[in-house]
Image (tube, rainbow, N blue to C red):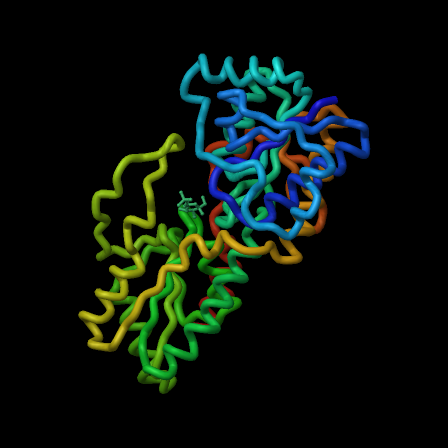
Length: 342
Ligand code: F6P
């Protein structure tokens, strides 16, 4: 057996732990492992390198991905789909493990339909992949957010300011809600719950008047819907139809709107790619390891077109076709929990 492995979409800490788990588990079964470079681009353009024990040694704790990543989408063109299948056959790959978010896993579903034996592993700091409770990279990202909020609390308190903290989270509020919960945010703004600046200001005023608070920390997801916030030209869409949400500057816009209405001193901070850097947390290392090993189990059983998913505390198969094109929105239970502490 020869198993190809790739990482697609935005990187997160824990990808290397997953690559290591796939490879180590494959070696135990006597399989060969091939690293496909830069996501689906590597399969399309035939850029691969064999992975041996040495290549995956010492990477468990490292952020990023030794294989590189890209947002290449070969599903748009019939000839690119055929090229991917042909390159996999040429490289004698019996299976391809795709580690990625809904975009990368959507391609894995499409290529499976085209005849490529694929297995998916969910990773995205956004945690919005359908079918799995958690994705690799989410826990590390929210740990970074919580740490940032701890640091911002002291300075906000010292200067009696409102600090607006912009976090990643394209279509779902998982990162903002969990980061906010863990870091004691005074308000969280997410894509699933559109809100007006007037409502935000009313909440801040209430905190000051009823609870004698002198500062506030507001966490805003980059994709949050705020009625008064007008998006500038966000530029071209990528191969998966996404715009660059950092160009919205939603945190800065909310900061200005609050300042203009309340005449409080306000600051804003964008956590950005810091949320995707550094070493993975214990949770992400263990999750990546479990998912990687289980992915190889599926290959051994000849069970393709599946994603390995965490449901409860079990790793189970979940059909890739049910992942493609869907978003797992924030569980309302966590939203309700966060609002108790506003
Ligand atoms: O898809 C995950 C994500 O982290 C989103 O939250 C964010 O919009 C996007 O990646 C940004 O990615 P990049 O700047 O690397 O293109």
